Length: 308
Ligand code: ADP
Image (cartoon, rainbow, N blue to C red; front, side, top):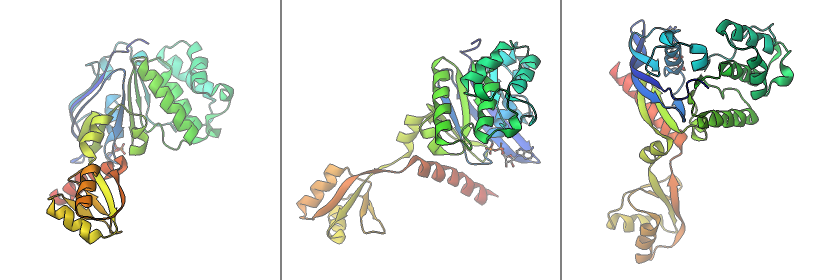
């Protein structure tokens, strides 16, 4: 690996199409040695950001750099950064190994790498099959093999888990984790929080081209999910009265259980006991990360709607 310590940095990155911002004043960092998840709903500007990183789209303003340099200024781009931008961008009549060989030759890489990366992605047995016969999952593997050809220290993968079966998803997760552990910088995008939850160390969350949150997954969970207590009483009305008297905030759920946000389980149990309320259920609940993500990105959409 030639460039394990290089990070990716976007600074005030903006891309406008016909006056509308696809990426809007976006700043974030992807550090070496960790998996950075680039999360946002479809149309949030993730692919556009990645395309600007590779010089395929020119920013309207701002910069996105690798180790502080534009991709065009890197001494050896093929050994510095690898990309999976569109897994379907493969010539259908070419075999997997021909496809990789063409890439290796164009980038001045050792042709022995072709067999190595085919083995890494588990396509060793499919080396002589035409890419046109591949399933989406096999195409994703071939795309990742292409990204790994130059043994780069920086990997940028656009929706690598898209369309994969659970086994394929597990495989890419393990691969990304191993590559990050070797000190590489991994930036991968997804529109699904569930994919991030099990994979990313850090999150860069975008909506409508703008940064919504940049934090470690743990910080994001702590900052955005509220701890609440779900309590079911034999007499919900009596419990509501007791909580009200104690000055604890709560809301009544459609099934008559109460969702308490102002106290923990122990405190709710004490309040109920002091009032002789019989409880049928008492325990902590957390908003799911998928709900948090939808709420946060929905807020951005709402704001846009009002501003327009
Ligand atoms: P994501 O990858 O998060 O799904 P994209 O970066 O593909 O989002 O798209 C962001 C926005 O920019 C979308 O509204 C999309 O329609 C728009 N967009 C992307 N590329 C172009 C283009 N070449 N011309 C006009 N609009 C574009």
